[in-house]
Length: 499
Image 1 (tube, rainbow, N blue to C red):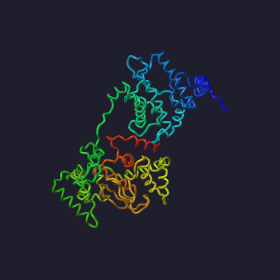
Image 2: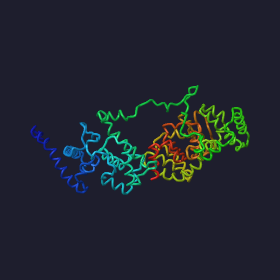
Image 3: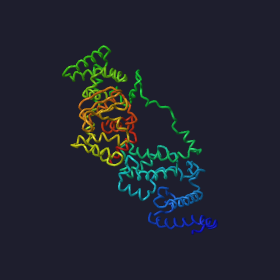
Image 4: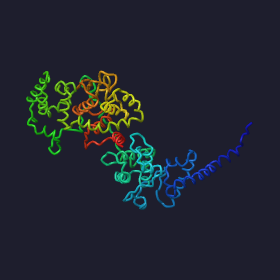
């Protein structure tokens, strides 16, 4: 029979347990600190994540962190540096608090923990993974802990100093953005936002939020338009790319348009050209060079009509149903040979995209696509395109459908005559319940037609497939636009497949 412990015994046990545990922590830490070369300065700089590596038991971690916090407070009071607010948030540095709290004129990286140092030395590819990465999180934590010694609200210069120093010391961390560190910058900014969010009641945080916080406003950009019959239409008025009107900014293809005498066609001659093109299309063997010449003459006036409902546009300009003429329209308006750009990009990126899809939730989809017989290079390129929505965790139905109607009014590829997308022999592009173009085409050709419809009709990308189409625009068709920065998810995937 088990004896009941007296109240006195229970009280003694409760008093002695922390002391006993602290002694165990001390013995364990003495051994580990020797192995990890932890001196006094390194001890004060330990983070919670580093503590997990030192103590296997959670109870030991809690006790150690409490004692470490006491040590930090004692050190702060003794040196009269790094004053703390009542809730534990380091105060913003001010001019009268001494030189130690001012931002250094020449920033140097802090001492890196051994695990992080080893990962950086071996150029671990996990730093550039699109999804969460342990070593990247550890790197961001170390940078965060170092910056908060000076401020909890770093400005652009401080971010630039820190990340510029980082990629200078470790060049392999450079990404494909203009600065070379946009992905790390986004991670570091998000880290500060996350750590400041529980501290919104502090006066300092409220003051900075009021001063620099973004004001909420109602945005109507994603609300689809409606035609008179009440049907939803794809959102138009895409403004990133326009026809160039100044000679200095024009590429050779657009100069042909601007130099043409027929730019100033009046309404009568415009209608004559349109009727002539439509009549030419009715012939058994249309004269495409003649149609292309008239397309150049009527280009500027036709652009004004593109904002009309899709059905009206296609009735007025049925020549856009012909893929070859649609490609010519794209070259006229944007000076872009999309077919050549796509083939060059796929030759370089196909194997890397498929390699990136071999891990994660898209692995099953990749396996099912690669089971297709006669897995040639052209089919591999099609696989790379079809797997992109899964890599971005987006809805592929907004990119392509197989023998069924699309779920939205946005431009969508419809693949026909096959139960497998890779073996479809015919495809069409549909928007606003209107078939824009159709014919025999493979997946890359269908993607080219899809992007051309988005650009020619000025349609904004739907949020359900925005990253996939942005990736295709920037890195497959190489339509770089200096005014439009690459989104971080798109940049992360491109960094990963290029690493």
